[in-house]
Length: 201
Image 1 (cartoon, rainbow, N blue to C red):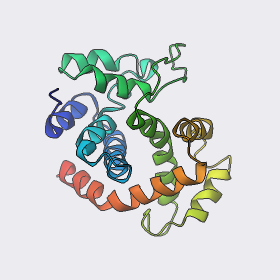
Image 2: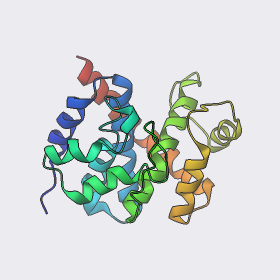
Image 3: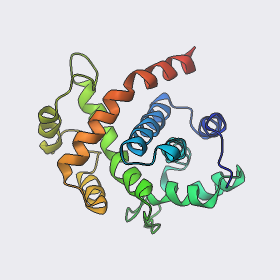
Image 4: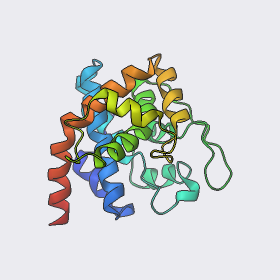
């Protein structure tokens, strides 16, 4: 099965997403997914896991009311394979979007479960990093992240319920998901910064 090349996937993302915040989030989830693929024994599929992360919010900027519902159309138009479309849509499983419809595409493969669990969490971790003097995840300790996680007012838009459901789908304790996602972000932060700088030139 022929998958889209990474550079083509990035161009496709930028066709529908112009906001640097959305592009940075896509790159973050991409690098976190690749890190997880390597950690969990799927190294040969790391690029594929990354592309699922890169494209997961393809429809969010232009069609926020139809998030995960518009994606299949945009992706099929670009010749994306059905397994990748399933992965992208499954990260919204059980979540009701703006038009009142609930996403019913269930994460089946471990890759889809990781995408579901890590997506929301990367937003919370990044928000926590921006409050630090270093503005970085690289010197963030787990206990500091846990404190922010428990504070209901902090990054209230990042659903703890979704994050916890994600950990449960993987059969992991929440602490394992927090630890690994923080490690993944710290390991890939410099790569993302460099790519964002390149984009802004």
